[in-house]
Structures are given as structure tokens and as C-alpha cells.
Amino acid sequence: MINLNEVGAFVSAITDLGVNVRFGVYLPSISLANGYEVLVRIIHKDDRFNPDIPPLDFPLQPVSGSDNNRWEANINIPVKPGTHFGQPGTYLYRYQLLQNKTLITSWFTDPFAKTTDIGELSAFVTPDFVPDFVWTDDNWKTPELEDLVVYELHVEEFNSTFDGVVERLPYLKSLGVTCLELMPVTSLKLDFDWGYGPLHYFAPNERWGGIQGLKRLVNACHNAGVAVILDVVYQHVDYTFPYHLIYKNAGITSPMIGNNGPFGPEIDFNQEFARDYIQTANFHWLDEYHVDGFRYDEVTDLYDGATGIKYAKIAYDNYTKSLQIPRFTPSGGVKNGEYSRIIQVPEALNQPQLILTNTYSNATWQDGLLNTAENMAKRNYVDSNFLDQLDTRIIGYPVTKTVQDIIQQPVEMPVAPFQYLESHDHSQLIYFVGTEAGTTDPENIPFGDRSKYYKLQPFAIALYTCQGIPMLWQGQEFAENYFLPNNGNGRIRLRRDVHWEYFYDEFGASLVRLYRTLGKLRHTYPALRSRDSYNYNAQSNNQVVAYRRESTAADQVAIVFLNFSDQKQSISVPFSKAGTYQEMIDDSLRSAPLKISVSRDDELIKVDVPSNYGYIFMKSTP
Image (cartoon, rainbow, N blue to C red; front, side):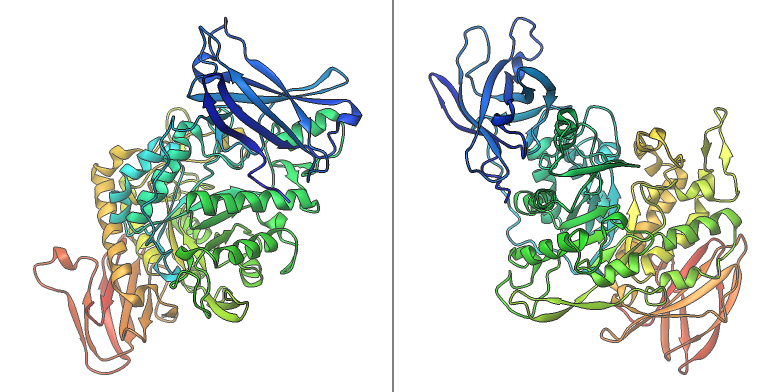
């Protein structure tokens, strides 16, 4: 078994003689008997660019009888006058592998590094050089699924660093956001990248703020009522990932990596070490960083059945562990009959219903609504499939499923798919508006026409009033405008910094107002986040549609109207219950409420819906 207390770098003491540190690394099949040597090369961060101060090398020795063939060194970094060696601070290190005095790999990072420097260097920090982080989220509870509104973002593109995201929390809260989905946050090589070529599985990106920065972000989110889930990549690794690089160079079988795939060297889950490594990483993020769950990249290749050893086991083990973590259950894990609220979201776009149903996931990515919206935006019509995409039951998703409580007794857990109009994997919706090919700038790079932001309004209303979990992609709320290539390095290395100036302009300000209003309405009215819907298919057409959302428990009914055309449209639908209905989207802007009086159940009422807009008529007050 993998034990994080015996691998990595650990400073035990700082004395007048220098810094005492222990290194440990698992290297299965790398043995002294076969002539292998392992060295650790160290330099103080403040000396690394001084050509007159070379790094220090120390040998590691194999630990006899250890699990996973651990190599270890207990060393003293001596005080050296004229250098920072032996002094407090941050030290950088890397490993070397030799065989029979021949260099096999000149540089590989620590696969268990908790701290890194920018690029491929591992790091460790001496005690008290950085104060221990103090958490203040003891009372935090991960939200129920129905209360989630998710915002997907890339930290560097969104606002540079983890602290930059903290700065934007009031803004995100104003959109109704209750959960951040962070694109991969682990330390990478220096090139800008989306993060889907993992190198360090235990260390947050140093240039975004490292350990302290990510903890500050999660802590601030929890204190603001916002959950945090991490996008994690367990299908493949970067080519310089140690358990690929050194075993390839040595010409022996890796304990973790199998064949090269289209996205990079693939993790071989048939090997126990690989399974242990990934699960240890998950537990590390749950314990050390207080995250609320994970979005799992490219699960299609990791699904081997409901009781498989790949994704199904990852999700089950995380769920089981989370039952013992207080933030995931109302009682803090001391009562039977409770399911864990840990958020587990696989991306398996070819079979999302199957994987959500058969694993301990409680949500899933799925592109149904996004694909439909893109086609509608291109062709300026309402797809016949559109209303079905808003009702998750119609498109094959369960409402609950049976899982285990803390004493392994059956309990029903809510489940639902994520619903989104945009994601990091697609061009922004404004690009598709109004033309099949999009428009082009003088450089022939296609962009959308942001002056047509109003075309996005009915889609936004649909997103906040649909069944499932609404997810926003960074900037969509003010018509962020990027085109994304379909493949190649230009795709994953295209930096799409959020244009915060759009927030203030005519187009962005109008759209943000609508998103903020919709966020408030979804959280105010249980009917808008319930599992009960009825589509008025017979009354809807290819320009204007209507559907009903209701909550029996709250005695609420909402009738939603969406007009995707450039003219006002009329539609007549039966209002299911007698009473007074009040339009809520623009209620605060009107001098007098817009109300409809319904004298009997199922009375047919004609409603005139504004162009490229919509209405939400509520039959109750909050």
C-alpha cells in the first residue's frame, strides 16, 4: 500500500549544522541488485540561478522488505558560507537514475511531491518558513445536489491565481453560484496548458499560489457558501511523468503506465500500484484541501462495469471514505440512514446515463443541452429535441439510486446530470449565433458578434429553470467570445483570458443582469430546481416554447415561456392550477406587477412573449 508519510520530502529539524531532511520514493523493479543508483539533487531556491553555487547530490538506498520497493535517504544539508544551504526557506530537488554508472534519466520529478516550483522541479519548505494554514470551515456542509449552480473556470484564465478567484467570489455569488468546478490545478510544466497532461498528482500549481493559495481559495469558498470540486485526470499522464519516463528509459515495465494513447501515456488500472496511487491522490485532496468532490476527465475509457476496478472503484472508495468526513453528511457521519453528499461527476459523453446509474457518482457531464443549443443558435430555430433536454427524466437519467450509509445499509441518494450551454471543450455560444460558419475578423479567426447577445437570453432562462444541475463556463454570463479549434495543440494551449471589460459594456451588463436575476430566482423558488416538469409540446413550435415546473412540497407552480425569434410571439397553454401568476424575471423593473389570473384548473391562457426573451410566471410568493 502507498503511505504518504514515507514518500516525498520531510524536514525533521533545522540545527546549527544545517537542515535535516528525509526523502522517500517508490521505484518498483528498480533494484540495487540490478545495478541501479538513485540520486537526489538539491539546491536552495535563492541560489538556483547563481552559476557559482552548484547543487548538492545525495544517494538514496533501497529499504529492504519495503512495500513498492522504497528508496530512502536521511541527509543533512550542511551550512555553506556564501550560499543559502543549511538555511530556512524553499529547497528545490529532482531525482536521477543511473545503472552501472550509466545515466538512465538525468532529471525526474518526485511523483509524490506535495510542493513544486514552476516547471518540473519538486520542492520542500522548511518548518515555520511559511505559517501553517488555519482552516475556518469547521461548520461547512457540502450542499445538496438540487441546490448546486456550478461555475467551471480555469484559474489562470479567470483571474490569474487562486487568490484572484477569491477576489471574484462576491461576483460569482451574485450569479447564484454555489459550486466551483476548477479545471486541473496540479503543477505542470512551464508551458501554458489546460492541465490535462498530469505531472504532479499531489501538488497545487505553484504559479497560481501553491498549497497556501489553494487552501485559501477552498476555505474562502466554504465560508461564502460555495463548494469546490477539482477536475482530475486519471486516464493518461504527461510524457515526463516519472512512472512513464524512467521505466521507458530503463526499458522495463512500469508499475503504473501502459500503452501510449491519443492523449498521452495511459494509466494501467490492471496494476495494483496504479490503483493505489490514484486513490491516494483522491484522499489527499479530500483530507488536505477540504474539496467537495471531483469531476473525472475522460471516464469513457475507465468504465469497466458497475463493479469494475477502474472508475467504479474510484467512485466507490471516495464515497465510502467521505461518509466519515463531517462536511458530507448532515450529522457529520454519526447517524445511520444518511448518504454522502460528495460530488462525483464523470465525463463519459457516449454513455453518461449508464455510468451515472451504475456507479457511486451522483452527477455527470453530458453534452445534450449544449449540442442542441449550438444547433439552435446556428439555425435560429427551436429544435424538436430542446424541451426534452430540459427534463432529465425524458433523456434517461434516474432521480435517485440506492447506495450505502455508514453501516452499509441501503439508502436512496439523489442523482442528476450537469446541464450546460458552454464548457471548456467548446467555442462560446455567441460564436454560433446567426450563421452556420460564424463571422471572421481580418486574421480569419472566427468570432461571434457580441452585439447579438440578446439571442443568448432565452437559453440562459432555460439553463436556470431546467431539471438537473446548471453549470456556467467562465464568462458566458457576459457573452465572452472565443472560438476553439477542434483539435491539436492550438486547442489545449489556447489561452482564453476572461475579458472582464465585457462585464461593463452594453452587451455584457445586460446579460449579467439577467443571469443574476435567474440565479436568485432558482434559489428562491423550489419549483425551479425540482424534479417535476411538464412540457407543452403540443402548444410549442419552432420559435416559442413553454413548460411547467412545480414543487408539490412547496405548493409552487412555475410556467416558463421562451421566445427564440426576433418578433414577439403568442402561445396559449393550460395553466394547471387556478390562482394568480406573477412574472418574476423583470418584476423588480416594472412599476406594477405583471399578473395573470387563472379562474379554473387547466384554463387555456394566451401569453405574448417578447422577442429573444422569456417569462417565468410563478403561482406563489417565496
